[in-house]
Image (cartoon, rainbow, N blue to C red):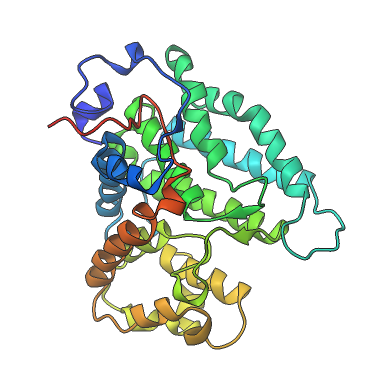
Length: 321
């Protein structure tokens, strides 16, 4: 998200985004051997760069601190509020199976139909041609309507959606904190409501051996928020009182609160990975470890990345040095 990228999508491109030939993104990773293409791609470099830029942007900052809120940020929050309202308008149906409520498909059909219109309301008129490309990432970010599940691949699609908005210049360098604290945090609230309302299955969950059934990025950015915190150490997040008192300030603790609401039994049993992380001495070590784990457990796993879509903004072509 450097200044040059605001004007030209990526520093390698010469033409401004207005002249980009936008395209509807499509799958490119079809067999395990295609994973090498993904790791060498411009998309991987730009996606990871985006995640790490935001990681630095929120370092040591509370959710409740002051930051600039631009018009596009407000419009993205309004978009997410619309998705939230549609959940209220689409109550779960009575069905024999406890999980995967079929009303999710009705909710999703509405998003599928309206996504381009929703995205068009966020981007300026001269970038209207980008809407079909960017909208694909929004549609991919809310879960799978066939399986009625949600996982880190869907979360990655939302980060890719935000990354695309940065590449076409809708979101700017000074929007960094608002991207995480206002937009991504609102996205998390809507996803949690979807997961609860429609009893969505975790996609490709590793059960007690995974970090979390549904999310990963808020643990990365949330641990960055806590770096050099004078009073909260990693050992504190397994303390219920600490979580209850501080979750409104820190994304990491908000995630812990949601887990404890959704799961019963001892924390060490239902969330073993997180329990182990609470023994790490510092938040900067937690943050570094989670970034490594994210690459290994999410971005380098074929079952996750096979669903990722590539277009003009996140291209499969190799990085050009």
